[in-house]
Length: 252
Image 1 (cartoon, one colour):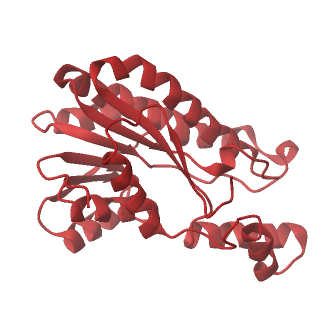
Image 2: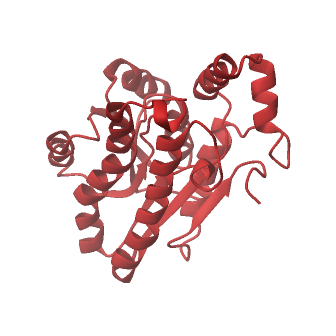
C-alpha cells in the first residue's frame, strides 16, 4: 500500500460521498487530511470518524474570496496533495429546457472551483518542487449522456484544464492528473435515476439498469474504490497529465 506519511492532503467536497471516501483512503494511507466544504456539520462528522491527523475548514470553492481565506488559513501547512472533488450534478433536462442560471452554477462549482483551488495551492508546490493535484472529472465528460449537458460539458472542461496544467507545472516537479469515475453507487446516482424515471415515465429500476448495462462489468463502482484509486495514483510518480477511467468498463 502506498504510504503517505508526512504529507498533507486537502480534499474539497470532503464532507460526504466521494470526498469523504477519498479522505478516508488518504487517511488510512497515513496522510494528514484537511476536508473542505460548505456544510460544517458534515465536515465535523468526517473529522470525528477519522480522528487524529484530520481537520475541517469551510469554503465555497466557487468564490475567490473564500478560497483565498482557505489558503491563508493553511499558510503554515505544506499542502502537497490537492484533490479537487467538489462538484454538483446540475439539472437533468434537455438543453433547451435548462435555465442559464442552473448552467452557470454547474460551471462555477465544477470548473471555476477547480481553477481557484489550483490557483491558490499550486504556487507552494511549485516552489517546493513537488506535489500532486488530482482533479475528479467523470466518464460523463467523454461519452454521450442525454439530458446532462452542463454536467458533461463541465467535466470535459476539467479534463482539458488538467492536461494543459500538467505541462505548465510538470517541469517544476508537480504532477497533475484526472480521475474520471463512472457511475458511483450512492445518493447522487439514486437522484439521477429518480429524475430520469420521472422524465421518461419508466421505473427507477429500469432507469438504473439501462445506465449500468453500458458498462463491461454491468455495475457501478463504489465510493471506496474511488478512494483507493486516488491513493494508487499517488503511488505512481511517473504519472502526469493522465486521465484515469474508473468506470467498471463504462468507457473502454
